[in-house]
Image 1 (cartoon, helix red, strand yellow):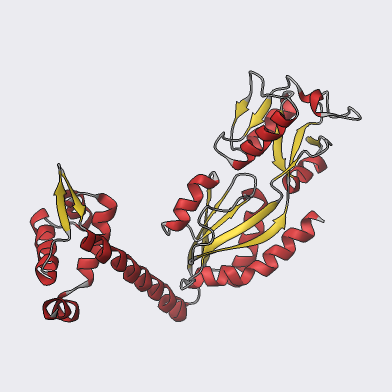
Image 2: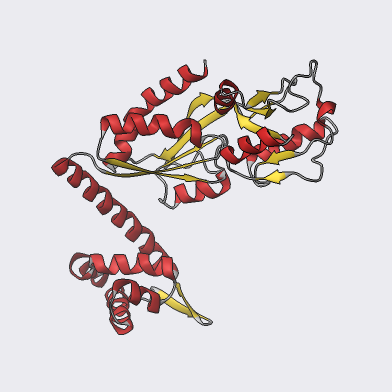
Amino acid sequence: MEQIERFFQRGLKLNHLRLLSLFATLGQIRLVAERLNVTQPAISKQIAEIEAGLGAAVLTRVGNRLQFTPLGESLLRYAREILLQLEQARHEVDALCSGISGTLTVGAVVTVLPVVAPILTLQLKNKAPNAGLRFIEATSDKLFPMLEAGELDFVFSRTAPAGLHAADTMGQPMLNDPLVIVCGQGHPLATRRGLVPVDLAGVPWILPPRESPSFMALEAWMRRHGLSFPEGCVQTISLSASEALMKSYNFLGLMSLAFVRRGVSRGSLKILKLNDAVFLGDIWLFHKRAAGNPIVAAALECMPAVQETLRSGTD
């Protein structure tokens, strides 16, 4: 239609696209106006300009709320893609003018972050001294939606997201670093020979969150051997707190082999050698296929060195 073609050639502005994206995030014209530091009538006027140019509504009222129409949803999808491309272009131009800079935002599950973070930081800072890093520690069910929404550049996890085969998501194995059952050096089981699963009956645990894959894997192992978690367990995602608790009380815990080896060398932790008590061995890196952001591209170039260092440290 001539009207739509004319609107896309002459009438559509970046401010229109930013408004649509912001409304999708905030959900209210009042909040959009506050964020942009303009009046609500000014926002309503821009929406009216979009709808007049298209000859159709992009928002509709459902009860007390405004929602996108199917046409509005379609325009929003392209608006987000365009704004993302512009942001990537800004990063690239900034990098070309002043050297690689910016912040890499990395999400990782608790058993992976202390293993990966120091090495990734060192390798990236060697390549791009002005680069910043932001690490977010959470369970994988929270990290993968953040990756999908563009809030994270990388996710390090022991499990794959349900949509791994989506066209814009890539995954690569980085390291085999299984989770193992551990205790403090002073635990009664630390020196017992010929351990069998039943020896763990009634012993309290420091457990990961119940929604985490590591908890599910451990719980399945316990059930296979007729065991259950007793009363008096502690739940935390803090490895430092877990290590401190195991030094002072007879808890069992689940930690990555690479992390535990440090504790063993410090004389604080002991690996319990039990048949088939090895969980979730592979650590994976997940990221979006498009790496227009120079800081992300630089970090990806570092990954072979990161991987080599990780593997040499666990041999």
